[in-house]
Length: 506
Image (cartoon, rainbow, N blue to C red; front, top):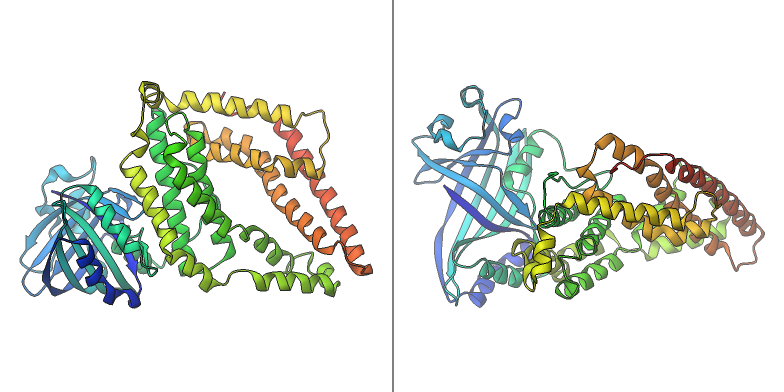
């Protein structure tokens, strides 16, 4: 068995001629291997039983030989792929699942039945260029450039990937070389394997953006450090998934999911601050703040688009005031274009941030300056920490938003950041508790959060109407005030309902 430790990159055509010089710049010695044409077929059952177990099974043929490969479930974080891999030679391109050692399979897997029902799902065919490099510190890294296509059900998707795999030596050398690669503005970290892309193509199930952040999967026996690792990995993958969704089908809502993932990552530094020192993450925090500022316009853009949609109830009202409609259109013109966002996701600074987060996570860099206190905190059951944290947040909510007090729009807007942070804590640690009780408790607060989101846009539109001597705009402003009052009334109902719901962590 081999365990791959590799970083995957998606490369644009314009950067491919630069790759040999980037390799030479980093390596002490470089060995060029002959280019190969690789024909690969991926197999599964009609019900995708291997896919359900996160197992990849393929045959690969070159001019010289054929082999079959099993890749078992592994870990993918920030473009770093680590998966157990088993290879066996075969006489033809017909696979033989039963030839692998029976000990490698997950418990309870029906090997015989699966083997009898295998058929080719999709193929990947590409030209592979390979370089074996040795670094100044003695590490050996294989660099592979694949150019070709994935084919399934009469459809085709382009392959243009660069993979760097650690053959021998320190993982630090792999990350150091990756840093040189992402300094180019046409290379970005890749989350999805050829197999994952092939299955989506074959089954006509394109990558879809998530409707919400969701919850980090946690074992109830997890320690605080284990929860940190799971939550950070979840956040990085969430950002990368929606980055890819945006390349596949650009939309403002998909960009909002990217900002949600960034916010979750940043929140983890605060959530686990008794084992993660502020000094050790200062650079990462700065870069996350930069990225959020680059996408800070997205929220208002979504609302402006919604409010000016012909399907929206506000469309006629806004368009009855040409001055306001013109201001909104002017603001839309100032928004970054799709090409601008593509450039951001290809930028060296963005990809260096993802690479730095991955390095920080994989190398457990928060341990660097630990004292005995941090070591003890790391081993604490995270469920105990969740109890304390959620109790503290709940008492704080009661203090800031007392049930007997009526709140106005500004009260809610001033409280927005605190509520969003409290909900993010639930996204990180809420999976430790009963799902139905959690949903019932969070629902009113999610309604309030969505209300704050809309309230801030109504406030924004009121500001656009203000300061202009226009009778129609004055009417619109009055109408917006009425809409805000109605919205606050609905939020008040949700808030009062929330106090009657038993906290799900008790």
